[in-house]
Image (cartoon, rainbow, N blue to C red; front, side, top):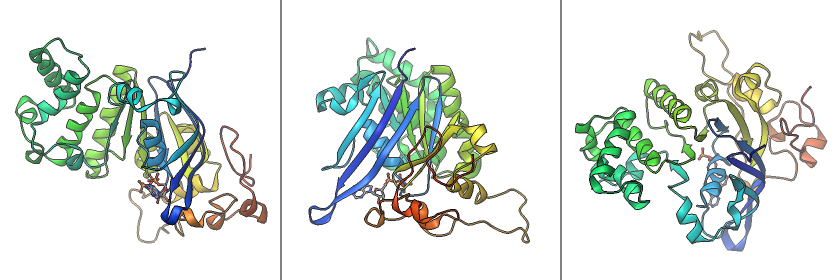
Length: 317
Ligand SMILES: Nc1ncnc2c1ncn2[C@@H]1O[C@H](COP(=O)(O)OP(=O)(O)OP(=O)(O)O)[C@@H](O)[C@H]1O
């Protein structure tokens, strides 16, 4: 059997806190992503989604220390030096960031920005070919030549997000990471961008790691879900299975809290009570224990292991 496109095993990330303190932010992330597959990392703000993505991109904050294994096509990325990273980043692994306005250069036309990775990685023999490729890619994400030749501020939010996707795809990466790519968009455009990403994954056979706090929006548009909380994996599985039978109390709570179409005033809302703990408040046990309806003394004292599907002492089989 060939190696998965991306395999993360027992990824632990420690950050440098104030006054020399160490913050244990990721506490053993395991994930696997195959070519042609969409995997969504889901969790509330602060659960560790972005740090997981940054670790895979080799872009952790200054002073961070990562241990475990992150393998791309079987090659361990945690052992790479910065030169080797530069050859990979943008080329084999690319990322679409949350805020297109900050990720795009305001002084350069969109077309030039999409041509840049093609030129940088020498993927076209000359400028004219690079230009043609960039235009084709921009057309694929729904931007006409007129929009391609515009500056970022002349485009709408949805068009800018599409331009950013084209830029990330320009060097034909095998792995695309999209961090909340729809946050800045309205509901209709969010769905459109997710559908576009899914089509691109199918066409190009790349892997997509999609980061989102919105289980309801994402769940039906990806193949698998990985639910994170407090820097740990709570549950993972095929999206359809997980929605039909969410087993972890956190997944159940996220799903119950989703906004529902046609919910009348008399229908009870199910907000998720409490907040994700700050890193300094995380104890030794299951991070969800303080908010969990099933928690016992054991949950607060000892973290349940992750068996490939679930990390919970109390969930019923
Ligand atoms: N540079 C940093 N220094 C200190 N703590 C950090 C740093 N970056 C992230 N953290 C902390 O690590 C934890 C995980 O952060 P992360 O950004 O991965 O969460 P997230 O799930 O992506 O949230 P969001 O949806 O808000 O981006 C949080 O408690 C966050 O405050």
